[in-house]
Image (cartoon, rainbow, N blue to C red; front, side):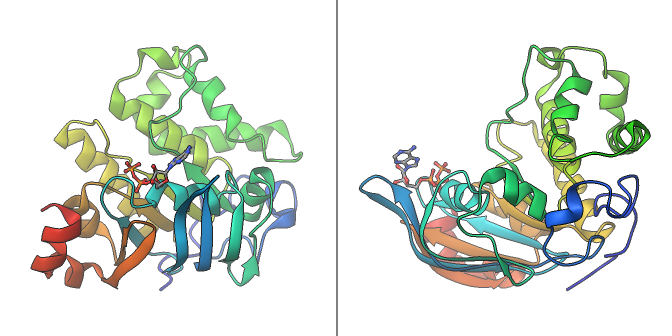
Amino acid sequence: MNRGANGSGVNGSGANGSGTAADTDRAGAAGESASLAVEGLVAGYGEVIALDDVTVAAGAGGITAVLGANGAGKTTLLRAVSGMIKTRRGRILLADHDVAGRSPEQIVRAGIAHVPEGQGVIPELTVEENLRIGMMSWRRGPRADRVAALEEEYARFKPLADRRRKLASTLSGGERQMLVIARALLARPRVLLLDEPSLGLAPRVMAQVMDTVVRLSREHGLTIVLVEQNARSALAIADHGFVLNLGRVVASADAATLAADVALRHHYLGF
Ligand code: ATP
C-alpha cells in the first residue's frame, strides 16, 4: 500500500533537501514510503521474555494497529524496534534493510521515529526548544532548512505555533501530544511508532489526534504503527491489526475483520 508517497513534508523531500542531512544512512530512497517487518523477534527484561517469536508487518504508507491487554508486550515491541532495548533474536526490516542491533540514534537516522507512551515533553523547555530536539539527528544543513521544517510543523499543528515561546509545562494534554508527534516528524521519519497517543485525552481531543494520524498516513505516505489500549478507536482508522497476548501474536487481520470478531473483542480487546 502506498498512498501519496511522494507528497512534500514528512518524508524528507521538502525543507531537508536531498543529501543534506538525515538521509545519508536511510534504507531506500528518501521521499518514498517504507514498509516495516518484524520477524521472529525475541526481547525482554532480564529473565522476563516480553516478546516471544513475534512476527508483525506494517505496510508502506498504511496504519497498522498493535493491540492487546496490559502486559501483552506492545510497548516492548516499539522499544525493540526503536533500539531502546536489545533484541535477543529476530530481524527488524525497514524497507528490506535489517536494523536490529543498531543504536537508537542510528535507527532514527534510518527513518524510524518513536513517540513513547506518556508524551515525554520536557516541561521546563519552551515548545520550540522541545521541537528542536527532533532535529538532533540532522547532521548538518543550512539554518534556513531548520527554520522551514519548524514552520512546516507549526502549519500542521497551529496551537503549537501560537505557543512556540511558552514553556511546554503550560500546554494541555492534547497540545503535548501534538508536540511529541511534531518533534518525531522533525526527524524526517518514514515509519512513525506511536505508543498510546490517546491515553488520558478527552474524547474530542483524542478524535483530533486520530485525525492527525490518518492525515499523516493518507496525505504523506507515512507508515504508522499505532499501539493502543483503545482498540475500538485504533481499528476505526487502521488498515490492519495485530493482537498480542503475553508476548505472542494471537491474531492478525485487516482492521474491519478484527473489529467484527466478537470472541476476539471479548477475550483480548475489551469492547
Ligand atoms: P501496557 O499497555 O500496560 O504498557 P504492554 O502491552 O505495552 O502493556 P509491556 O509494557 O510491553 O506491555 O510489557 C510486557 C511485559 O514486560 C510485561 O510482563 C511487563 O511486566 C514486562 N516489563 C515491561 N517493562 C519492564 C521493565 N522495565 N522491567 C521488567 N519487566 C518489564
